[in-house]
Amino acid sequence: MKELTIAATVENIQTVTDFVNEQLEAIGCPMKAQTQIDIAIDELFGNIVHYAYHPEVGAATVRVEVEEEPLAVRISFIDHGISYDPLARDDPDVTLSAEEREIGGLGIYMVKKIMDNISYEYKDGQNILRILKKI
Amino acid sequence: MVITKTKEGTSLTLVIEGRLDTTTAPQLESELKSNIDGVDKLVLEFSSLEYISSAGLRVLLVAQKIMNKQGSMVIRNVNEDVMDIFDVTGFADILTIE
Image (tube, rainbow over all chains, first blue to last red; front, side, top):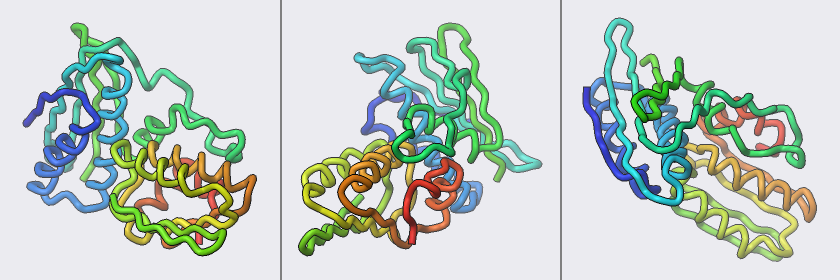
């Protein structure tokens, strides 16, 4: 297990991505899965940046755990900002035309589709969002 | 992300290299805002686009809505990872992808 605690800012999305990618490369994660995980980081860490402490800046922790047999990566995004369960909202209607489309909720929907599991928990004043990707 | 811009008459081509995500999407948005007036053909060249997140999709949706009113928008040479995202989000049906 490795974790990084860092200020939740747009600039640090890259730092978090590099931190996770380093560990993915160490376990020989295929490029496609890595790309999908990087997208998930942009969405989930990005949500913390924009909403958890707004308009203040707070810290977030990103924890990476590798599971073996079958090989999988579990990444937890932890913040102590306002309580928010992104999984509670309805999935967006992805069949609407451009004019009818709203972009809200699309990020979390994408993450649901490209990860193997996603879960949310509010515990001890912390939002804990976990994703699991089979490698 | 690097954006290379070519404007010929009322046709605008943007070649986008790298990642279109929370960090870089504002860059594309401002590039479009300052160049889209009077354009009736917008081409986005994606052969060197590594991936796209919802922040990038938002900018594409805004651009598509503008171009629906004033002309056409085409996205070229989308790689497999980006196409997966377009499929999952239904953007494959909204955008014109060549």
